[in-house]
Length: 323
Image 1 (tube, rainbow, N blue to C red):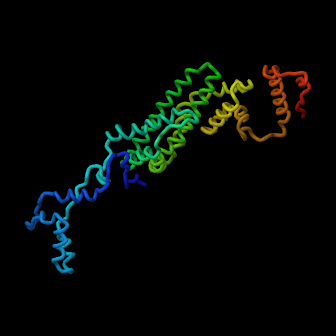
Image 2 (image 1 turned 30 degrees about the vertical axis):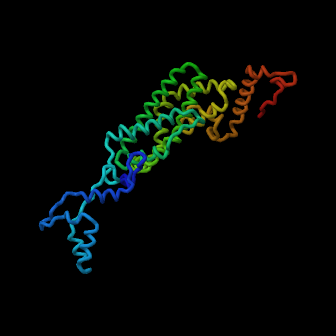
Image 3 (image 1 turned 180 degrees about the vertical axis):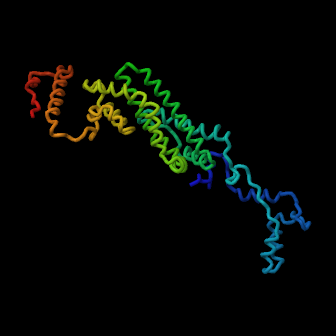
């Protein structure tokens, strides 16, 4: 299916007032210079509606059709900016439409979770609609990907600044990933018209899916090995990273790409179901040993020792797992 041609336009963007357009066209038509047809008859005598009506009434009804066909036809002058003549030039796109969209994208990318920004989604959607109707779909799509890629370079630099600092690195990664995924919930609706008529129709894919893949390739894939290693280390220290942050990182990584869970299934299985294979009765002894190690780890932590009391049973009295 070809890209749709424009059926209307947004006067709020183009600054064009179409009210009384028909009346203006009549006025413009009345001032056309006098011309002559091939029979030498002046057309200037037919410039008013009154003269046209008097001419038609002076002939029998049977000749009305012939007279109509023989009348000189005037092409009404169309004002620049009217629905038919309105065009979108390269300069218009670069100086007006794309800057508006880029500003809205930047606001969405940098908004803090839970904050509100005054973006007119109707105006932004109308900008995308006009660009698509005027055959700028491919340019718009490529500009969007390029701009987001530039933003991701900034994210990578931010993560590099915290490299070597386990807890700040994990917390920064969690925040940036959550912020980007939240931004997509605003960016994708703005570009929904482009998604329907260009991304889905011509590229046979989905804009939301492509933008998530872009984040994986430009950010997550670069840091995933170090991230999983650090997450595994801090997971053995209770509350080193807050449980909501740990759970958010695991869930978002899995939502972006399920293959990330294969890098450390045991780690992901602590926060997500159905990561590990079903329980095998022949491995009950191994499960019991793993449970025993967890008990020993909990008993040996400073967190547990700081809360000991005479009323609490010592580790040896805890109920152990038996086969």
